[in-house]
Length: 428
Image (cartoon, rainbow, N blue to C red):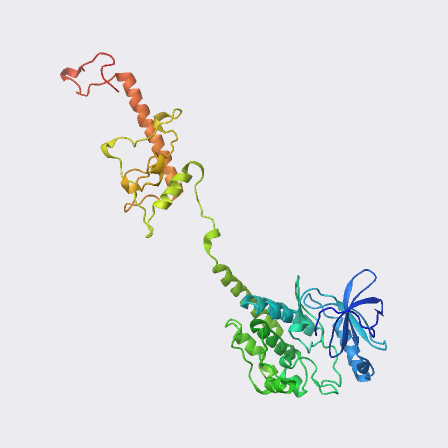
């Protein structure tokens, strides 16, 4: 059924029951569907039965039984039945209006859905069919044009609530009720319709969503119906993750098809796995690096990463020669020469193998097999220990000089006396 809105025709009613009609939504084998609204402004899709079917008492009885069953359907994947009049000259029923394109229109305009999307749509539809079948209703005409992709998820519409001439698939004019490529073999043969009938139609619908084509090709109704009964479905374009399950749904024997509950659980697993595969394929550039230093050590950390070779081993800075303290640029307010310093010119990018870190800061001592500490926390702890030890050494030297006076470096004289020099003659 084409759900595109059209203007009301001259023969169309303007009011049905308590609903005012605004537009035509389409026409199907049972009648015409209109967009209507009640006095509160709630919008409905209202179907009025064809006059010739309204005169068929067998049809009316079947219609009444299945409308009563449809009232019991609970679940969010179907359009809820709002009202119905079974005794009117032309019986009608109204369901909740669902905004959004049909699955058929979506695929026709934008191409096939991804495996994850097909599995997600199929999981929701099969879950909805569980509720439908528990209410004792079989849809009978599940196909892409009867599935609306609403903002809240897919919705099943346009139930084949009643068929003319009992369970036959052909009307009195010889045309198949429903779409031939989505009918189950038992429908074509005129056998009993069961929930497995909807499973077959769902399998064909999922194949269409994945390939943008019917699994039984194209042709006249007679050719399509023959293929449904006697030929296997073409599933070449269906993703590998879905093909076995779709093939099981399209089994000729209804007993070999999975149940709607099994379908729902399996499709949820496939949807989750396919969605996870898509997320894992994304580059991990957005993931933050743990324990990344900030503040004083941010520049050392950045420089350390730029010094690493492609193999992952960093080049350790050389030890300072002569046993003296590392060369620092002392700041005016930090004792022991531990003031902040700024890199000069291109020294910031100079490799450590050319001597020093190039930043005026003490380079970390190499550990293990000649590698610098890769853990920023360990680097921070060692820097703190180094600063404390340096300060203690400096304070110890200053205290010794203040208490003993400058030494001339000759050592003690015999007899335990020391040679002395005039004050200020020896440099600290």
